[in-house]
Image (cartoon, rainbow, N blue to C red; front, top):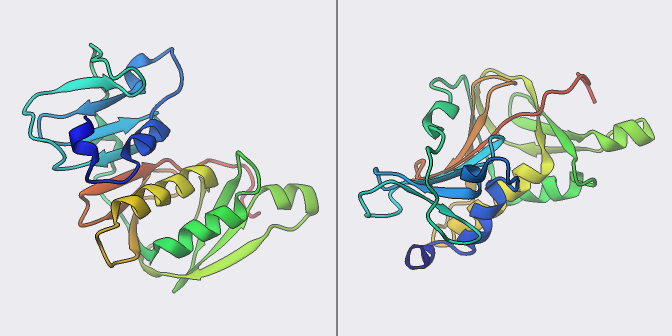
Length: 210
């Protein structure tokens, strides 16, 4: 795999982040090489997919720690991606990562996204719980389609953005596209016409308004 890593800075780090850490499902500690030239990795809560990555013309799973080939059937990651999206967001990648860092005050921080006409209001959960009021940060965004409120792990979104920051080094564009089907379905973050995709599952919370 080292020959392929040259195209994306810190790729092995990003793959390990998206993989599972649990020994109970060893197949999810692997990166999957598909026959279509793609690689994918998932921990069942998020998924990193890179298309047109290799030309090996065979399918296999490689443990990201030992680099050994692991036998077994990798999950069909295509079924994780919604077939229809009712909302599409375009937002500055550098702005989004700064917001996630600012609001991610706890390791397991949940951040609410309120989609409005031309902006998103981001609120964190821990400050609401401890101090009575959440921290709010708003950012301009181009939003097409349905507007709603959705919650994500700040850590997952931050690490998604960090992958894109490394992957887009050769691109001048700073925007990331986020496609959403509903507040409870996985959202798909993409750059470079979907060659790089990062899927993140929303967090369901009983707190409707932070």
